[in-house]
Length: 116
Image (cartoon, rainbow, N blue to C red):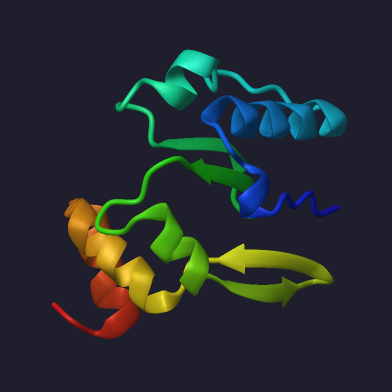
């Protein structure tokens, strides 16, 4: 099941959160710490992760090194096992990981590009 809402219809953070919570409720999933405060106002929360790989969802509220508009415009749709998934474009992923600067991100860059 794919629940996709065009970016243009998302006019406020509260509307975004409402759509996400509605989708989670439809799927019978808990939202845990994805409260209105954490989603909209708490800078410590920029990623909300649910599930465990390979069955997991990550909702990213901020991307270091890029604006949402840049990342969304460059994102690419990929079909994986009959499921359409919108993924960040490879070069944008590298920019975001470099901007995040965590050791884990630097390791990802090295593994993905061969750079050290």
